[in-house]
Image (cartoon, rainbow, N blue to C red):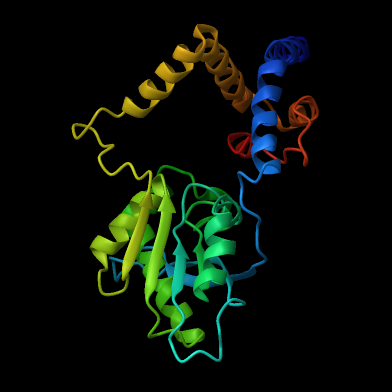
Length: 276
């Protein structure tokens, strides 16, 4: 068994060495975007949790769990006679702190421009909002992971937040991109009395089986890479495949991956590889 583990570890090292240049190029592109202002600065936030129902639609289910959210009220003009708007960053498939960072424009620039409050809500089953802790991802427990439940979570947080901070009369604008953009649009449709406007950026509203070609975006991006250089698409595909192979390493081998990719913080577990 030990010999087999050593052989597998050597194979991982060889894969990483072969793809190292490609991966470093991809990381450098992201760093350049940030250095050139492609990513907006990140504002400070306050961290809080709220107790929400595990199942919003079954009165016989009494279990609850803590859902995390972030907020900032610093841009509200307390001397204004108008009601401050409430900007809501919809949750997505990442921890809410990453949502706050991704939407730096919304969490930093928009509140100052419109003297608005900003609220970011974590999606259930992501980040710290795990209904069953480490057991949240069993087949039985995953039945409560749905868009309907997530939207009901958001409604609960918004209403409680407005009441706590005296923002009951505030116009509410939801914002999101990609999957969170889908939630933003759905939230406006499902709860129109609560949301006054919704921004759904790059929202794949028709990306469902039978409604549209689910691979249309990927195909278009691949064509762009090929038009630039036939080798480019192949290199990117190899880099992504290399990252996917890392999902099967042990926690003991995460240190090597962190070192090879020169990450700011070492990977703590296998799930963090997805963020890379």
